[in-house]
Length: 277
Image 1: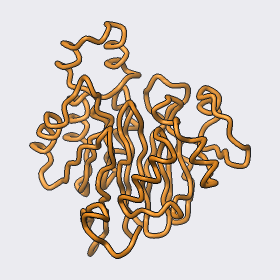
Image 2: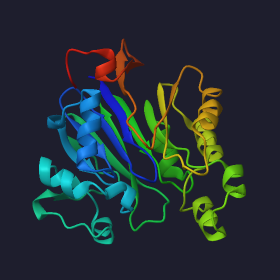
Image 3: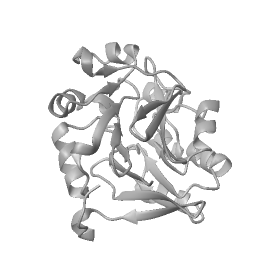
């Protein structure tokens, strides 16, 4: 069974990541409106009916902004910790709220979602891996530094959304106030291109096929710069820059003859596929 993955949005204006198989899917975070989720999934040929849950990493607005309308319209359960629920000021029906704990997998059909802690300036921040039939995809964004939990889980992934938030020189020379620069660079801030590249070079799995460069700063990073940096170190791994303005293509991660291969699916309108995921 394959996994199909795409970034619907990635950046300080909204984050939302889709991971699913042929039958069911989940979203990690819902930082864009329900309408935008629907529009972007439709353009990709992805069915809203296959969405079974939303997992929330932390309470910052660019990760929860669209959750109320999405849950209300599509009757989706929200997996979220109580500190994140309260600090985010979210008012959800009790029946839609589901809790999770670190390293206690949650089963959504054939998907197994595991949360793990990370360093970030939020009340109770987590990242997630999603596994299915030996395949594993991880979402590694909003991370101040690569702690042992991040390193261990990243090293097991066949595909990953990895934060490359800022270029150190661009941030240092930019016009952000000093306190904000320190927050971004701190151990509860965000990963720089340099930190992410070190994690990628030292700890990636030999089975990794796809890497999404994610949560790029609008002011302190450059898509062309970071793409060139990682592509030069990626070998056969497909490097995709996740946009803050639009969805990426859908990528298929597939097991073939006891090895892992990645297959790229273009948006449905471009590829003229006769089916939807």
